[in-house]
Length: 462
Ligand SMILES: Nc1ncnc2c1ncn2[C@@H]1O[C@H](COP(=O)(O)OP(=O)(O)OP(=O)(O)O)[C@@H](O)[C@H]1O
Ligand SMILES: [Mg+2]
Image (cartoon, rainbow, N blue to C red; front, side, top):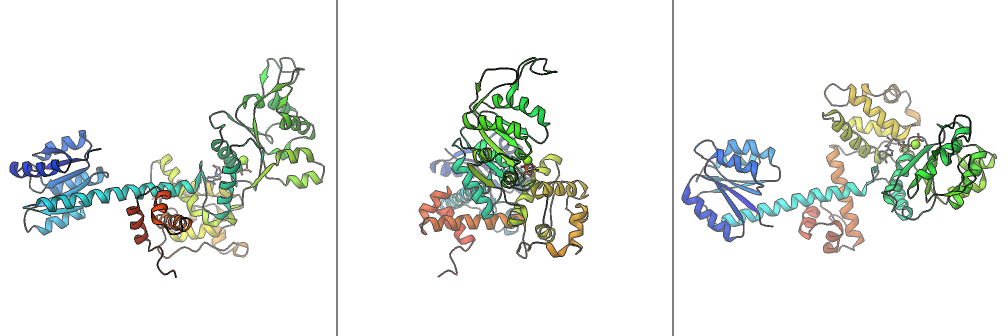
């Protein structure tokens, strides 16, 4: 696609010559003689680069730059100054101009600056895309985590999602079992069909059977009309049985039949029905121990646990904490329409707290601190009492090691560190072949070289 350049210049002769040069180079050129005309074009057209004169009949280039630079982040600005006016040129650069040209402008110089400006723009775009790629690697359908343990969970999910195998999710409360079940569904070929969740702990045992399998009118007192069960509702999709450890032995027997051949009999009927369902079950209890104690059927246990995924507690993956905090704060910003910041010290503190309630506890604690913070800068004192106490040294003993954050750590630094790691991995996987690594990363080789220099990748090795 042709790039569009806007020429803001009141000198007619200069405009004509410049336009000619740029057209020859294959650009679309628009012209504006005044600030007002330029403003209108900026608003109505999509402009890739603005060549901006300093002295205009109705305003100055600096004023326009000040206004436009923050509002048009996709546009590149190049200032044109009168000979010797270096001070203005410096001001323009500070206001976000990419470069400046001094009049009289030579055609070669003009072409070179514009070429560089567009190269820079491409790099910026790639930078953004690379960041997004990094974020994708650490985010599987909203499940965030960069730790080795979470990477293993992702790779397991990716391997089994599209097969119809039953999955048993285990893990402490708040570790993300429900989130994980949904991620499996979204990663599978069933993603466009329903994802139906049944919380087995929230439904009284005598009602669970009808909830799962449905019933005919008159099947029991109170059954005034027939109702479809969750197994039927999940047809072609996924049935998520949360807190599976809570179901009675009686219902377990019926569930076993359904898990085996996907058939069930609604209450009050004699007719067997079929539903094409993928089952995912979750529990925060030790199901195997329950089997040993005769509280859970062994055959059902093996049926459900064809693939077992254990969600690790947060204290065993503290490197995920900054990422999760970043994600949650971004969500709150969206929700509350204000911005939040967190100091490096507080972030480090939060990685030393053991989080017995795991991600849910972290999320709730942050939400509380965000709501209570007057300026948007989170403060330790606004966290729940147990978190605050932990840092006043009362519970030092059982705390896990803290995450070692660099001196000038910030969330941006964190992202950059992550980006560096992704590039290093890509280079390693491709045995140092930069062209192939660039391809894998989805950026140009030039973009990759820029990153390698920026992060000093490969220096100091061998
Ligand atoms: N990896 C993750 N990235 C981002 N958010 C997460 C992640 N895991 C969990 N969450 C969020 O944390 C909260 C708790 O997760 P979830 O409900 O999935 O946990 P759970 O293990 O099912 O808990 P419980 O055992 O109490 O049912 C939810 O708000 C969920 O969206
Ligand atoms: Mg849950």
